[in-house]
Image (cartoon, rainbow, N blue to C red; front, side):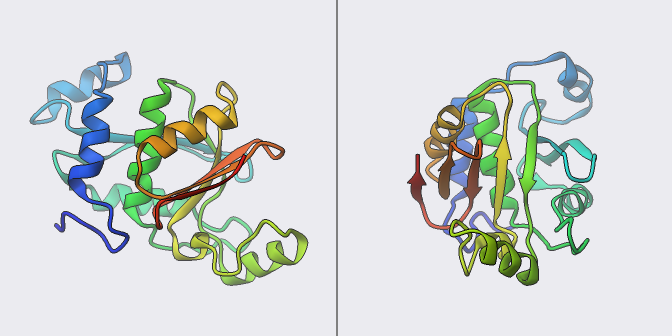
Length: 189
Protein backbone atom coordinates (compact mmCIF):
# COMPACT_ATOMS: atom_id res chain seq x y z
CA UNK A 1 0.00 0.00 0.00
CA UNK A 2 1.35 3.40 -0.94
CA UNK A 3 2.18 5.90 1.77
CA UNK A 4 1.11 8.88 -0.33
CA UNK A 5 -1.68 9.52 -2.77
CA UNK A 6 -1.92 11.66 -5.87
CA UNK A 7 -3.03 14.73 -3.91
CA UNK A 8 0.26 15.00 -2.02
CA UNK A 9 -1.18 14.10 1.36
CA UNK A 10 1.44 12.10 3.20
CA UNK A 11 0.65 9.24 5.48
CA UNK A 12 3.06 10.75 7.98
CA UNK A 13 1.24 14.11 7.90
CA UNK A 14 -2.14 12.57 8.57
CA UNK A 15 -0.73 10.23 11.21
CA UNK A 16 0.55 13.36 12.94
CA UNK A 17 -2.98 14.72 13.12
CA UNK A 18 -4.25 11.40 14.43
CA UNK A 19 -1.41 11.17 16.96
CA UNK A 20 -2.08 14.73 18.14
CA UNK A 21 -5.69 13.84 18.75
CA UNK A 22 -5.17 10.42 20.32
CA UNK A 23 -8.32 8.44 20.61
CA UNK A 24 -9.85 8.28 24.05
CA UNK A 25 -11.21 4.80 24.62
CA UNK A 26 -14.93 5.41 24.28
CA UNK A 27 -17.44 2.67 25.15
CA UNK A 28 -18.12 2.09 21.46
CA UNK A 29 -14.46 1.09 20.99
CA UNK A 30 -14.11 -1.11 24.08
CA UNK A 31 -14.81 -4.35 22.23
CA UNK A 32 -12.77 -3.38 19.18
CA UNK A 33 -9.62 -2.75 21.22
CA UNK A 34 -9.55 -6.31 22.51
CA UNK A 35 -9.92 -7.73 19.02
CA UNK A 36 -7.54 -5.51 17.07
CA UNK A 37 -3.81 -6.11 17.08
CA UNK A 38 -2.10 -2.90 18.15
CA UNK A 39 -5.30 -1.69 19.82
CA UNK A 40 -5.73 1.93 18.87
CA UNK A 41 -4.26 2.50 15.43
CA UNK A 42 -7.69 2.82 13.83
CA UNK A 43 -9.76 5.35 11.89
CA UNK A 44 -13.51 5.63 12.08
CA UNK A 45 -16.08 7.47 10.01
CA UNK A 46 -19.60 8.33 11.21
CA UNK A 47 -22.18 9.96 8.95
CA UNK A 48 -25.83 9.93 8.05
CA UNK A 49 -27.68 11.16 4.99
CA UNK A 50 -30.87 13.15 5.32
CA UNK A 51 -31.47 12.49 1.60
CA UNK A 52 -31.43 8.69 1.71
CA UNK A 53 -32.08 8.04 5.40
CA UNK A 54 -28.94 5.87 5.51
CA UNK A 55 -26.18 6.02 8.08
CA UNK A 56 -22.69 4.62 8.41
CA UNK A 57 -20.55 4.16 11.49
CA UNK A 58 -17.50 2.08 10.71
CA UNK A 59 -13.80 1.57 11.22
CA UNK A 60 -12.21 1.76 7.78
CA UNK A 61 -8.47 1.74 8.57
CA UNK A 62 -6.57 -0.48 10.98
CA UNK A 63 -2.84 -0.44 11.72
CA UNK A 64 -1.77 1.28 8.52
CA UNK A 65 -4.13 -0.50 6.14
CA UNK A 66 -7.42 0.53 4.60
CA UNK A 67 -10.12 -2.16 4.70
CA UNK A 68 -11.24 -2.58 1.05
CA UNK A 69 -14.70 -3.98 1.87
CA UNK A 70 -15.42 -1.06 4.18
CA UNK A 71 -14.19 1.48 1.63
CA UNK A 72 -16.73 0.02 -0.82
CA UNK A 73 -19.49 0.53 1.77
CA UNK A 74 -18.43 4.14 2.29
CA UNK A 75 -18.30 4.68 -1.50
CA UNK A 76 -21.87 3.41 -1.78
CA UNK A 77 -23.00 5.60 1.13
CA UNK A 78 -21.41 8.70 -0.45
CA UNK A 79 -22.91 8.02 -3.89
CA UNK A 80 -24.75 10.60 -6.00
CA UNK A 81 -28.20 10.10 -4.49
CA UNK A 82 -29.88 11.80 -7.45
CA UNK A 83 -28.56 9.32 -10.04
CA UNK A 84 -27.62 6.45 -7.69
CA UNK A 85 -24.12 6.44 -9.26
CA UNK A 86 -21.24 5.20 -7.12
CA UNK A 87 -17.66 6.47 -7.49
CA UNK A 88 -14.52 5.13 -5.88
CA UNK A 89 -13.91 7.93 -3.40
CA UNK A 90 -10.41 9.06 -2.49
CA UNK A 91 -9.69 7.51 0.93
CA UNK A 92 -7.51 10.52 1.74
CA UNK A 93 -10.70 12.54 2.07
CA UNK A 94 -12.04 10.02 4.60
CA UNK A 95 -8.86 10.62 6.62
CA UNK A 96 -9.45 14.38 6.65
CA UNK A 97 -13.11 13.91 7.60
CA UNK A 98 -12.20 11.48 10.41
CA UNK A 99 -9.32 13.61 11.72
CA UNK A 100 -11.47 16.76 11.80
CA UNK A 101 -14.19 14.82 13.64
CA UNK A 102 -11.66 13.74 16.27
CA UNK A 103 -10.46 17.30 16.72
CA UNK A 104 -14.07 18.41 17.30
CA UNK A 105 -14.42 15.82 20.09
CA UNK A 106 -18.05 14.96 19.33
CA UNK A 107 -20.01 11.73 19.26
CA UNK A 108 -22.56 13.15 16.83
CA UNK A 109 -22.18 11.79 13.28
CA UNK A 110 -21.71 14.17 10.40
CA UNK A 111 -24.71 14.86 8.20
CA UNK A 112 -23.55 14.24 4.62
CA UNK A 113 -25.06 16.81 2.28
CA UNK A 114 -23.01 15.91 -0.79
CA UNK A 115 -20.32 13.34 -1.52
CA UNK A 116 -19.83 12.12 -5.06
CA UNK A 117 -21.59 14.12 -7.77
CA UNK A 118 -21.98 12.85 -11.31
CA UNK A 119 -21.10 15.37 -14.04
CA UNK A 120 -24.83 15.68 -14.84
CA UNK A 121 -25.70 16.43 -11.21
CA UNK A 122 -22.86 18.92 -10.92
CA UNK A 123 -24.00 20.70 -14.11
CA UNK A 124 -27.58 20.88 -12.81
CA UNK A 125 -26.44 22.29 -9.45
CA UNK A 126 -24.10 24.73 -11.21
CA UNK A 127 -26.97 26.06 -13.33
CA UNK A 128 -28.86 26.88 -10.10
CA UNK A 129 -26.00 28.24 -7.97
CA UNK A 130 -22.87 30.35 -8.40
CA UNK A 131 -21.20 28.37 -5.59
CA UNK A 132 -20.76 25.14 -7.57
CA UNK A 133 -17.39 24.74 -9.30
CA UNK A 134 -17.33 23.64 -12.94
CA UNK A 135 -14.57 21.11 -12.22
CA UNK A 136 -15.73 20.26 -8.70
CA UNK A 137 -13.69 17.72 -6.75
CA UNK A 138 -17.04 16.13 -5.88
CA UNK A 139 -17.01 14.71 -9.44
CA UNK A 140 -13.63 13.07 -8.76
CA UNK A 141 -14.74 11.53 -5.47
CA UNK A 142 -12.45 13.82 -3.49
CA UNK A 143 -14.90 16.05 -1.59
CA UNK A 144 -17.74 16.08 0.89
CA UNK A 145 -20.12 18.75 2.21
CA UNK A 146 -20.83 18.14 5.89
CA UNK A 147 -22.81 19.54 8.79
CA UNK A 148 -22.94 18.99 12.56
CA UNK A 149 -25.79 20.21 14.76
CA UNK A 150 -23.54 20.60 17.79
CA UNK A 151 -20.76 22.57 16.12
CA UNK A 152 -20.70 25.79 14.14
CA UNK A 153 -19.41 26.12 10.59
CA UNK A 154 -16.47 28.05 12.00
CA UNK A 155 -15.59 25.30 14.48
CA UNK A 156 -15.85 22.58 11.84
CA UNK A 157 -13.79 24.58 9.34
CA UNK A 158 -11.04 25.28 11.89
CA UNK A 159 -10.79 21.55 12.66
CA UNK A 160 -10.55 20.67 8.96
CA UNK A 161 -7.99 23.45 8.38
CA UNK A 162 -5.88 22.12 11.25
CA UNK A 163 -5.34 18.96 9.20
CA UNK A 164 -3.51 21.01 6.53
CA UNK A 165 -4.40 18.31 4.03
CA UNK A 166 -6.90 19.76 1.54
CA UNK A 167 -9.47 22.39 0.73
CA UNK A 168 -11.91 23.77 3.28
CA UNK A 169 -14.91 25.85 2.26
CA UNK A 170 -16.96 27.80 4.83
CA UNK A 171 -20.67 28.09 3.99
CA UNK A 172 -22.27 29.71 7.08
CA UNK A 173 -25.47 30.78 5.29
CA UNK A 174 -26.13 27.19 4.25
CA UNK A 175 -24.67 25.79 7.48
CA UNK A 176 -22.10 23.37 6.07
CA UNK A 177 -18.39 22.89 5.53
CA UNK A 178 -16.81 21.55 2.34
CA UNK A 179 -13.81 19.27 2.95
CA UNK A 180 -11.68 17.91 0.12
CA UNK A 181 -8.33 16.24 -0.41
CA UNK A 182 -7.24 18.57 -3.18
CA UNK A 183 -4.66 21.35 -2.78
CA UNK A 184 -4.56 23.05 0.63
CA UNK A 185 -6.72 26.19 0.43
CA UNK A 186 -9.66 27.88 2.18
CA UNK A 187 -12.56 30.06 1.05
CA UNK A 188 -15.79 31.56 2.30
CA UNK A 189 -16.58 32.51 5.80
